[in-house]
Length: 447
Ligand code: MG
Image (cartoon, rainbow, N blue to C red):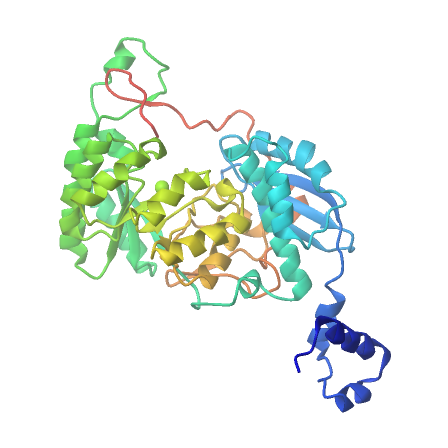
């Protein structure tokens, strides 16, 4: 006969009152020390405080959220970095999420995510998503610490030993780019993103008539499509001829050109076998992906600007992209990201989480924990951590032969030295805007 739930509970109750020898007599294995510790750790755990910690160790305005609990010394860290509007995230955390979260059970991560998400009624924007991400990741960190497990174990364990990464190579000329690519290969990377100068190779655009006419501000950038569209296939040809077929080449269009130009560029780059072409279209042009897919089989990576599930649902279910590369804090943290990863698995869309300098090391660690635990991992974007960052964040992920590794300590395995963080305040003289870029006539270009 099957044991009922109540008879199981009766046995658990009996276990509390009887000695271990008696348990063995009942055919129940005595709990191991780890099981006993885990059982102790599963009671209610109240959130007592939620704070935002701001620091500038990367030359980027990082925001990390710390969630404190009713268990002395038990806290979690999460990433809420939104470099262009960090103080808005700090305000959202401290004025709204802190009072919302206090007293709630830190164990129930999905419930807290759902209720905090709708607590603003209006939702899915970058500021509130980043603030929510800070809390969400911190709760996963706490759960891992409580369970004595790294977060990748909570998510089902490892599918691979480390996260294979791509690194950024850039140079304003073919020779400078070649040198940059070589340095990445020598550092152990098998995947290298190639950019001829900055996004859209803006340095190739000449004329700048809008400035002569006094339109915009003198510091506004200038980028026309033509020079970039002509130069990029030559850059791919040069790197393929120089480095052969072994190296995987990637490129980020960064949404800087018109949709039909992006389709034509992707078609032209197809012959050089890119690993992927990143963000060929702005999120506002999602409707063009079907057209892009009909004209080229270049692998497409998309999504670092996405905030809302409706931005990725059709692209994934329609098999219109190959890699989903959202910024985890920008979509609200690990809770929505693991669901997004599972959605991608059913359609064979792989991950390529956004990993730039304006993600805190806590966010990078979260990327890698998820990378390790999902079957449909594709590649991880890598940005190096400065020395100051490694001092402030003990336990930063470590790069070795192009693979990113995280600690196997419980939670995300990373900490934050708050006193050290204070030595790197935000530079208030730099508001951190994404500066405008314009065409020759002054028309604003999406970044
Ligand atoms: Mg990008």
